[in-house]
Image (cartoon, rainbow, N blue to C red; front, top):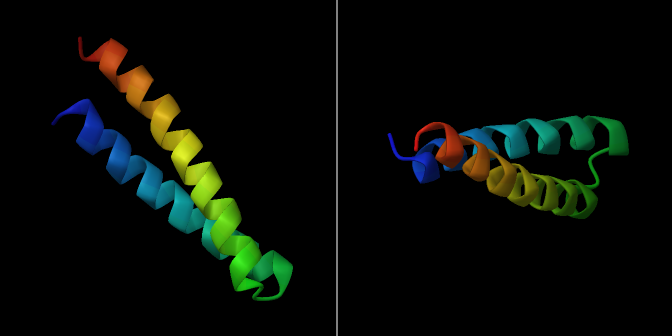
Length: 57
């Protein structure tokens, strides 16, 4: 699998997990949970992409 696809799958899974955790802790505040999950998912995607690209080189 390409590093891009692996990073995408990992970041989507992590962002989903973060969204659910924030929903439980914030009392179903959808806007806050979606923003936090989106920012975290983007950060995780970038970091994981560079890690997998350097390993699979």
